[in-house]
Length: 147
Image: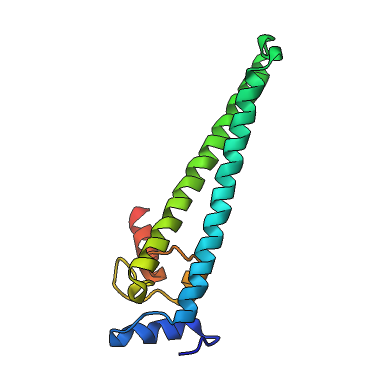
């Protein structure tokens, strides 16, 4: 089956007969997207690690014996907290990407199946959010329950 400009209908039709939800081309495209996003997330976490090392090295320098103004200390603490929050968010994102890659490699025929309803997730949604576990309808339902 060739990829058409209407990817969502391909995914919807493909899963109805018990066969794969997505074409090989679509799966290959999503794998590339997931790997690219994973690389960006790893780069982001690597950058955080480099900044943290530089920060520790600066604190170990000869000049660290001089006390900073309290406002400077507060700013530095806030920056460290922001960096840690970024690393935590990026770490969770990386985890979701890794989980999606595992699902893709373990069971490619069912990759793109909503974990909540069992229905196919549209290719458009997967292309925009390749680690999506839920179809848009179920995700909206979950969010409505939470609020």
